[in-house]
Every structure is written in C-alpha cells, then in structure tokens.
Length: 482
Image 1: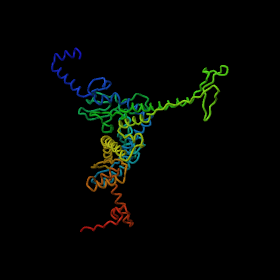
Image 2: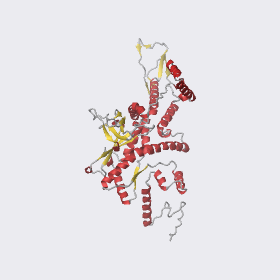
Image 3: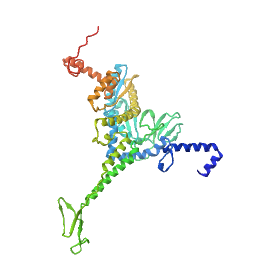
C-alpha cells in the first residue's frame, strides 16, 4: 500500500476496514486476485456501448476480410444464415374474417413472394431474410429500412424493404442532442430511453459512388428495423460474432500456410551431391550450377560424387492441432464442430444428434430472440398498415411467422415420436406441422382437397387413414350419429 492510501486509512478508519474487506474478498476468488497468473487480463467496468464504440468498426472490417479469404469463415457465415432462415420464414394471417383473411393472404404472396418487396429489386422476402442473417454474424448487425412508395409505382403494396449494412449508421453522433434527446453511436433516444431515430448516411460510406463528404440525417425509428443479438443489458449496437475467434481463425490459416510453405521449400531440395574433393570446383575451375531433377533421372553424377536424398520435415500433430482449433472456433460461433468443419469421420447417430440438438437450440435462440422480434414483427406491422391503405379499411389481424422446415435425422423414429406426442396430448398437430415448416391451415386445406378428389374419383390409397389402417387392412367405417 502507498503512503497516501495508508494516510487515508488512518484518517478514516471505516475506509480502511472496507478496503481490507474488499482485499479479503478478492482472496476468495482466484479469478479476482491480482497475481502473476492473472496478468494481462483486461478487466474494465465499461458498459456495452463503450466497448462496442471502440471495436465494432475494426472488428467488422476484419471479419469481412476473413469471410473473403478464409474458407471456414465463409462457411460459418453461410451456415448460420442457412440454418436460421433456411428456405424462408413464412408469414401467415390470423384473422376471424375469412374474406379479409383471403385478401391479406393474396397480398402476402403477391408482395413478399416476388422481388416487388425489395428496394434493390433482387430478392423476395425470404432472400432478404438470408441477406440479413448473413450480415449479422459478419458485421454484428443489419438494418432494414421501410421505403414508402407511390400507388403509381404499380407495386402490390406501396412500400419496399431496403437491407442496409451497419456502415450507414453515423457512429459519430453521440451525446445530448438539440431536441433534448441523447444519442449513442448514431441511435437517438428520448429521455425515457425509447429509440426515436437512426442517424443514417444517404449512401454507404465505403461506396465508390460517394465522392463528397456525407452528412447523416435522422430517420424515424418507426421506419427502421435494427437486427443484432443482444449480449448485455442496455446494448445499442451489435458486434461481429467472429470477435472471440478472429485471432484463432487467423492463426489457424497462418499455421496451414506455414506448413504448406515448409513442405514446398523442403521439396525443392530433393537431393544433395557431395564431392570427395570437397571444393565444389570441377574441370579447371568451372562451377556446376544447382542440379535439377526430372522424372526418373538425374542430370549428372561423377565418379567422385555421392548423392544424398533430402527428407522433407513432417508435422505429426498437424491434424490434431487443426481439429483442436476448429473445435474452439465452432464453439465460439455457437455451431457444432461437424457442421463447421464438414468432418463426419468419427460421428455416429447418437453423437451427431446430440451435436445437432445443441446447435438447434442456438438456432432457435437466434431466430426467436433476434430475427423474429427485430425484423419479422416490424415487417408484419408494415404489411398490415400498407394493406389497410390498399384495401381502404381498418384491419384486425395478426401476421404469424412459421420457421423453416427442420430436416429429420431419422424420419421413421421422429415421425412416430410426433404421432405419439399428438395422441398423448403432449403436442398438437398444428405444433408438429409448424416444426416441419408447414402452415397448419394450408396443410389441412391440401389434405381435405386431396381427400375430396380421391373420393370423387373412387381412389383408395394405403396412406389414407380414413380407408386403410396402418397395417394395410380396410379401416372400420364409423356410423353417422343421429
């Protein structure tokens, strides 16, 4: 303890007792102690936004470079996007008015199943979902901007969606604002902590088309959907998911490159020629150049020369090191080692299923805690608002979102398990249908239509439980009740 600290303890004994209590508490937890073993730990008490401010831009630039140049980084990005979104999270309408429900479902298909909903005109809604879920792991966050359109534009609904990278947010806008609000890295909050606006640049700051200094402008929060995975309370901006594994991925790539280069250099020295004279000077002072090899032959060999073949160095632990790195990287990204690396050499059904279940929980969390509330629910609201304008009436309805179909590992056992869950009351048909990515209402309508068509044509299939039992016998006909 320093002199000033001891003097303060003498003047205020209570402070000394409190300081001693804190020091004693640190001795209880090894991780809180200050010793040689804990040197180098960056233990800071900053909030989430202070941490993100100094690192987000750099991390997303590095992550983008990795996705461009490191194969496994690109695989991880697409793996997360494809698992969370799949072929698309499908919207359905819940409404008591059947006529209105039919009109809304038609508008859903006309607007979201085509590129009419994309401000860039390239993707339908499901392609935009995929772009967002690819941007979030790489850049840490993504923005979806509501773009109102005129009726004269000829769109099914008068709005489009613009998916934007986080670079559009002006991170320099911070602190108190002239209107009494305060801003955190381009996001403006009112005094009660509600988001009021996003300060966006008109063009991407890194675009070649941007020749002059841009000035950001506030866009009302009701026109922006901000998607990022919240890791700390009060967090306003997202951080690249590659942050915990960036150095490991770089080290892994460098190790592989170094191993390859070492093997290339070693392969250049296939053999060495030794002369008994030891001078390397032959035939009246003439120096022989470095000899080269061709398949199956050697250029020269004098009587007084001896050939020694080189042995390229081996790295016996190369495969183990790579696997160890891949396991840690996959764990840091929240995906299984097998799906990340593509290595299924030591996987059986049980281990594969366990790995998939853990990954599936992360996928469900990313979908239910991030993508659905932050992107799909705002899109559903925008749709209903635009549909009310289109139809010229008030609308009392909800937009529900059905996740993509989950591929079965063992269909025979999993279908039987779903059937048993329904029969025992542990689940409903609708719930099991949604797990497979189907809209229950659409599926029931298809089944009813198939049954009606089969009955009209006098067709009986062994897949029809109304006519045939599970073992192929005719099903007992139920008598109509009086």
